[in-house]
Image (cartoon, rainbow, N blue to C red):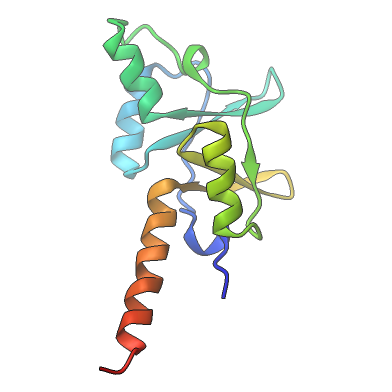
Length: 136
């Protein structure tokens, strides 16, 4: 029985603007316990994603998180997932794109974020249920 993105995604969607500093973004991500923020740029008319890796790369490059903005570090060439995608489809898109998070859209609105961790958590739960169902 396939599992779907809607079964694994986090419905806690942190949305920030492009002018948020990386420190502000990191603070909000930590408070919400999420690894990515959806960046809504109404002027550019699009959605992007800022991940913990983007912030880490900026810090590693010696950039100041109080001066760097989300806009400068947001991935705008985003592959979006749909809630009805299978987890295999989502994992394939992640591997192809080389990223660990997908924004989930339903009717062009962000309704969730699915991460590699979410997919692994669901697959582990299925394995545990399957192992528990096998008589010894």
